[in-house]
Length: 220
Image (cartoon, rainbow, N blue to C red; front, side, top):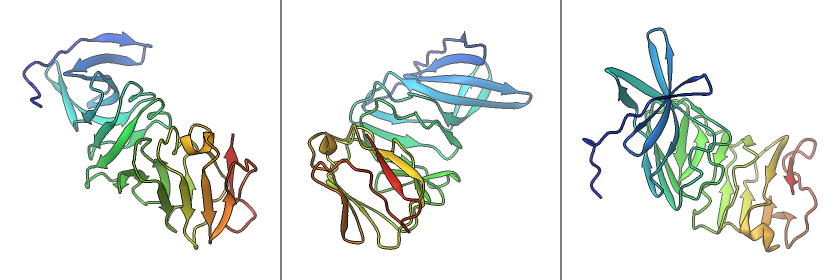
């Protein structure tokens, strides 16, 4: 696929009184000017299957560093292959709402986020942010490094059927919404910890992991 960078469309307009929205190629951004600091938030794209967010974009002679990904940024995407640059420091918790993502790749120089086996984490690996909805694996193991999971991390998962917590995992006070997971809707979702099934075969009671005092809860 040939991307014609020469055909850059820059269409400014004021949005919500918070900045200027522009389109560069197929991507949409919200510009933020704070003195000599010029940054941009990625807010969407007309591209549906491949998005490689750049680290910076041009606008009227100024270079803007792309530092954030906004709410619902990928809502129109299908089977998306997403690449996140080193400059991204903020991702809205609802950035992946409505998205059909196949894999996520983060630049190794990013100091805030990383991707491991196509799954998005914080750089410390302590928070699982997004498990791609169209990742084809049927089983996934959450390692002992993870201490929190974003509530909508597994939203709209199509293939996932079994979620396994490592024996030393401690995921506390985290509520995970599995209501849109296909296996959940078909009463086939299995969640296991230390070999024990905390949730299986349509038993929709809350389940807990860790030391039993905090724990994670299933949100229906």
